[in-house]
Length: 225
View 1: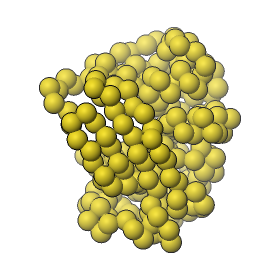
View 2: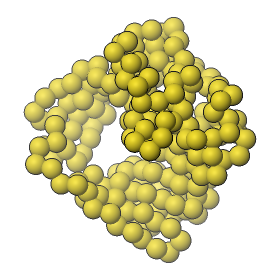
View 3: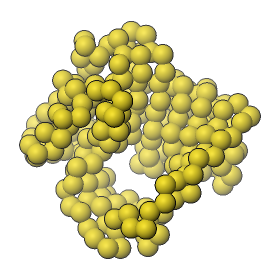
């Protein structure tokens, strides 16, 4: 079984052609939906009472949501803008809301999961929740600029506890304080993880393992948003 832990959000996304307000977002949301093509993942997350029922129905459709808690307060919100190329993103606002004081509990049905994906979330929480699984065969984590800028040491600790790290190119440079992606990946692996995947937007991604690098191209599209 695969368990996904992380953020379920209400996003405001601004592109050169349109603005989407309070749309379904969150790293855990889309990780779970993607995983559903292969199996029904368990989802551990928190939302507020303002979380629309129509979005809850989407989560229920693609994942086992026994680990999703509805708490008093507002759902985690993110507001970001993309430039003309849709490559560079500016974070306008991040509101943790119910995510700030969330103390996740892994449902008993999820504890035997062999695969765990720690989506963008509080890195200290990610380390803590990883201990709640009986025997994890493979674990992976992701992170974003917000946590790197505010909790860098916790991010590094989290990366030392997992088998694989997923991070985009700009955030890899920010985290490792270097402008060279190869050096950045090696530094992250020195912290303890085995694999590093660096996302490069329209240019695909790079997988690093030991002294090997495997480039993977992106799927080209004329109109994205």
